Image (cartoon, rainbow, N blue to C red; front, side, top):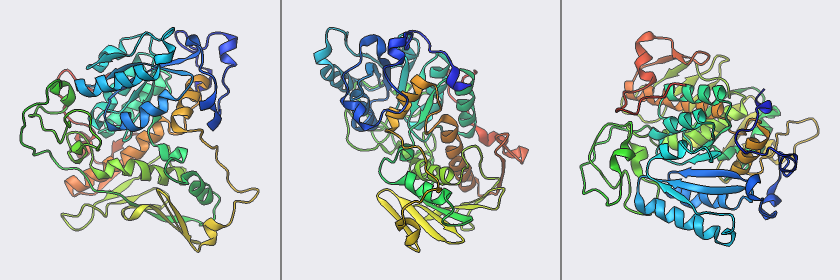
Amino acid sequence: MLSQIYFSRRRFLTAASASLVVPVLGPHFARLKRATPNERITVAMIGCGKMAKDYHLPELLRQPDVQLVAVCDVDTTRREAAQHRVNEHYSTDKQDFAGCDTYDDFRRIIERDDIDAICIATPDHWHALQIIEACKSGKDVYCEKPLTLTLAEAQRCVEAARKHERIVQTGSQQRSNVFGPFRQAVEIIRSGRLGKIHKVTVGVGGPSVWCNLDGEEIEPGLNWDLWLGPAPMRDYHSILSPRGVHNHFPAWREYREYSGGGHTDMGAHHYDIAHWALDLDQSGPVRVIPPAAPQATSGVRYLYADGLEIVHGGPGGCEFHGENGTLRIDRGHLSSDPGTIVETPLESGEVRLPESPGHHRNWLDCIKSRELPIADVEKGARTVSVIHLGNLAYWNRTEIGWDPATWKFTDPAHQPWLDYERRDPWQLPQL
């Protein structure tokens, strides 16, 4: 059982530290007294761009039982800015804080046995390699969504987490009610108020395209070869890796070499809610049908074994169509037709789901309890596999048969679509 896994290295080896924290601590935990050094979870940040700067670093720095000890980024300016922020935050703890180390190569963090966990916020084409190597080294992981770039990577990440008994949280923070009442929407649907669901629409962006950017003069202090990693060699462009510390989301997401476009970007959030609401976290579609229009970037249809249809397109977020009405959930939006479906409070006997104390907090609690986190690696892998299948249908304009139990295409001719050819030495790691 995952909950019975022993703690490695110095994690909570005494009864005193084991009793310090209960599995679910609630929002007031952030105001508790800072834990002593031997009771803290040592964490390293890999990727110091906008998501790290605006979300991950602030969330981790406010946790009293976390010590950020290292940051990694291929850009010197970004990693030094993150280092300064960490050092400044812990400036009052100089008696037990030796300073935050910096690296441009994530492998140097993987090698350290004094780091308990890593938080990954790199471009998508790096996620799987970093997740798998972290699991193999005995580190727990929080990784940004979408979890992987390919189907083969998604399956391998699940296998790595299970084999090495690691806690892996996918950054699908809508499951922790970040940005909206997603848990409440799922409770309403699971309580049966819509009746049998026959169709769900997911309104997000379209698939990525091959990168055709011209070269630019390289950013000083950037290890461009390490930014590319397993992706094909190409000249530097600031659209892919912006110059210095930036306040926007870089457009590498638009290109197939590095990501799946708007489809994987926001789709990783909203297909995730569709799967959560319909209890499909260990499943997937069996047929994927591209739209009839040859240039269409929405309209892919996913057919599930029980007759459910999920369609890429429609209003933003998820719209659930059931025999008793419809429900739409998006960031900052929850509505239904008829309105009583969402306006009537849940009654005794209807479904109530555990309330997450926060996405990072849930991950940290599970590192201690060894329970599966709210957005466990398999949930992230199953969600992203749906989107990868849809993108493959768009790119190849052909119907796809899929066996979610075996992670294989029903047509052997499609098997090469599971993965791509990486640059040496960045092959998909063995377990």
